[in-house]
Image 1 (tube, rainbow, N blue to C red):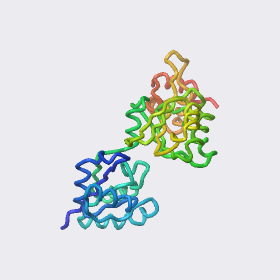
Image 2 (cartoon, one colour):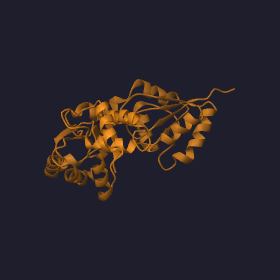
Image 3 (cartoon, rainbow, N blue to C red):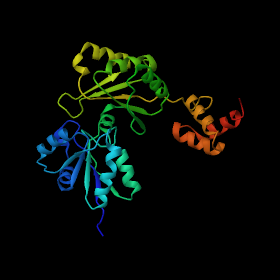
Image 4 (cartoon, rainbow, N blue to C red):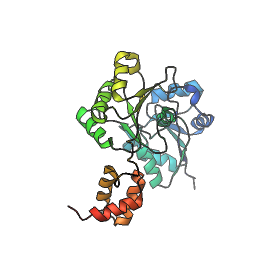
Length: 284
């Protein structure tokens, strides 16, 4: 009986070609074939590293249809690699459907460590990194984008989003309108490349910098939003976001469990949440 192959998740550089690991190069050379988000882009990368192998397309428009064929090859013993255009596959890139199918079929998936714009930006931004929320790209339509920002307004973790050059000014204007001047932002641009830049300030301050210097509107961008500052322990009970979460959880969970879960989500004190819940869970 043929042993099934392995699906390797292989990160590729987000800018600096020196960030490709030896393990990644060897894996791409050794597998039976490479599934790529853009075959033309990947072939250029392979040529740079002297890798010769078969490449086929697997992207957001064909992943669902092509996943079964990939599963079949793995079951027949072929090991395959998955790459995106840059960075780590599945992190705001295709691959989720395929990896989920592999898990469902009991096939081995091995993820290689490597470049990822989210972690690079977090490491150097100077914002809290112990807890963070990655939101991918914000909605392109203004009304939906503002609604999303409203939902993130009370987020107690650092928020990381991707943004494109043609939308960055609109996004910063919306952040200024929704988040105001109190929230600190960091714009990380052209990470690992020659013109890598980190800009700090409020949304209004960053908007002014980019308006004054159009060069700062170019390239790949990661935007980071500082967490909402928590209320001090001397306050009269849990924060408003924690209260809303607790009330929602109480519709499905006992108070003790709901308070424990809410405490973990919002970094609040469980006993304070429990007491507040006792006093308020039966109120209209």
